[in-house]
Every structure is written in structure tokens, then in C-alpha cells.
Image (tube, rainbow, N blue to C red):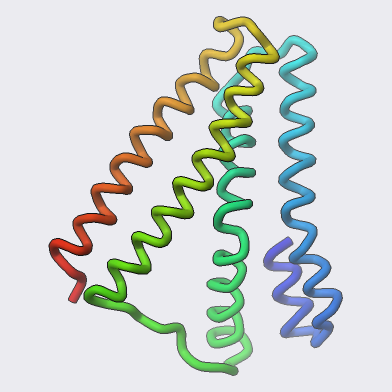
Length: 159
């Protein structure tokens, strides 16, 4: 939907239609999560793909606007050859930007973790939801590593 929205917006010059297509992205995420939950509710054993649905909606909500802005700037510059070049950060501005991204990661984690815990609770069978629990543990480690990387940018700023 993001590619369709950007293409419609800049190539076809239909800004409102492009914005509409971009706005459909969270709705598609919600449909993904609902179908995943129904699949599990109907007796399926949770797989990593089911956990990815919860992670994906958390990431989409937390990073959605900034990802679209990022893609928008690059699409405009590299594809349509209009607008300024994407800004390349270094030093403390880069560190602050990365730390802001880590805070978005925390927000994504909270949203995704809530969905994972709800699915685990509603299914109520640890043997069927083991993949969901594993995904939550793995994501917790990834969040911690991302924090260390964010802090490292302040200690050793990017040149």
C-alpha cells in the first residue's frame, strides 16, 4: 500500500488518492492481526508467523508515520527527481535521531507485546502458544541490544 500510495501520489499526480492508499496501511495491519487471532482461536498451533502479525502491527503503529515520511522523501528525490536530497546525519544529531527511533521501538514493543500477551492469554494453552512466548522473549532481547546501540552512538558518535 505504501508503494501504491507513493506511486499514485507522485507518478500519477493524484495526491488525495495516494493519501487514501497510504492511510489503508494500518487497516490492512488490523485485518492481519484479526485473521491471525481467529486462526489461533480456531485451534491452530501458534507459529512464528502468528507472532510476526503482532510485531508487525506494533511496528506499523509506532513507526508508520516516520516510515512513510522516510519513503516519501526518498521516493520524491530518487524517483521523481524533485525535492531536496535526504539529509545524512552524523555526530550527536545522528545519536539523538537513533535514540528517538529506539523510543519508537519501545512503543512498538509495548503494542506488540500487549497483542502477544492477549493472544497467549486467550488461547490459554502454553503448548499451542510457545512460539508467541518465544517471539516475545526474543523481541525483549532485541530491544535491549537496540538500546545499547542507541547509547553507543552518544559514546562513539558517527563521523
